[in-house]
Image 1 (cartoon, rainbow, N blue to C red):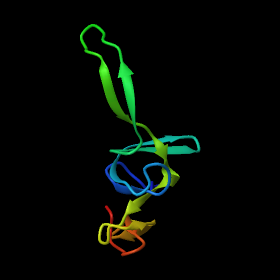
Image 2 (image 1 turned 45 degrees about the vertical axis):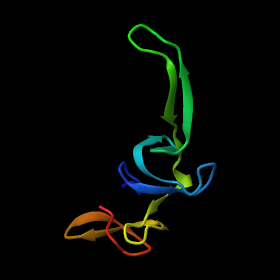
Image 3 (image 1 turned 60 degrees about the vertical axis):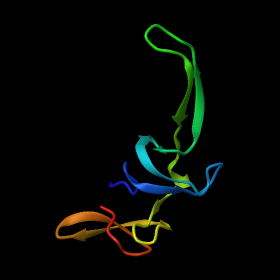
Length: 105
């Protein structure tokens, strides 16, 4: 089955502390029934590290995964949240935005 959200897609966060933020999907994590995505600039946490041999310590910002149901793909034409559908064009299955009908990939 094809994925509705893929790496590199522009998405908007629908719920949570980062509601309304827009970012690019860095990675899609699909384990069993729990599907999660890592989005750039969203769900950022600080990681405090001790200095070790070869690296200095400090505070690092790290993006953590959020549930895939909490994000929606952005429509390429109107830049609004949209659902994703599939259709066949020239014998190739492509994704399209349901709001505008634009092909996503």
